[in-house]
Image (cartoon, rainbow, N blue to C red; front, top):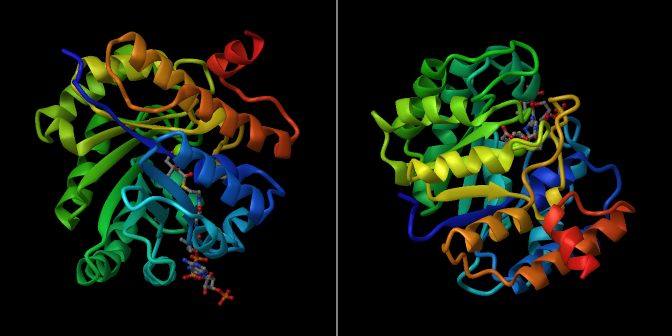
Length: 297
Ligand code: HMG
Ligand code: MG
């Protein structure tokens, strides 16, 4: 059965914009404000990562300090290490996101360490989070395949999920970083995970490189997964996964959910408007079929 309610985690301002060369701080602030006006309650607003690695996120502090969001909106940010977590605290972030992968090579390319070292590195991030009453989300990348290693064993994904949960993450987001997965693979991975992890601790984070993200999300919903990551206008990609396109578009996910009778309480028109606004700044149209269809009406 489908879940009765679904939580949308909007990652466009981070996952989407981390791959875009020159977006002004003002445009990022306007995007996040627009997403809030559309009703999104969980917004990943930036990344406190090394500016040498991802210069696009270097203004995260200014962005987060610049937005005006309602009390019930939760802003989160990527915090790969203690330095990032400390910076996130100065921005009054109440939810950190730590990130590793089920692929050794990807982890090395993305965060410059092994999977085991990454878990070790997260321990002091978790400690700081606990001291400050901050929730921590964990990302596992490459759950359905790796741009360097190809197929990834579901057991490898399970292992990393368990390690992140043992550290104290309240939720694990399963990243199909390169968007290579198909519904049968989603079903076998999630079925395995559900033997060890309750559905309410899992989220899906699908990129749409091969056009499979919505089908994959539908499979996850059928298995009871009720948290979906998406990016307005289908923004994005990953700097360490060449050729990977953006996350599934939030507009498309909302339309799917509405069609399934699940009301995510998002104003689709306003959401599409926020997408068009950032896309004008990027000088390209949204990668969302729903957004394009609404525009054509
Ligand atoms: P490193 O070079 O091994 O780290 O990078 P280091 O500790 O040796 O530090 C090197 C320099 O970086 C030092 O500066 C540090 O101060 C600085 P220097 O002395 O050379 O001037 N530094 C920092 N600066 C600001 N904020 C920090 C920070 N940490 C160190 N937090 C590190 C290791 C993890 C920092 C680096 O590899 C990094 O920042 N990686 C981030 C890569 C990234 O952001 N990738 C994209 C996000 S993940 C993703 O998109 C996947 C996801 O969407 C899910 C999916 O789709 O699968 C989440
Ligand atoms: Mg991603």
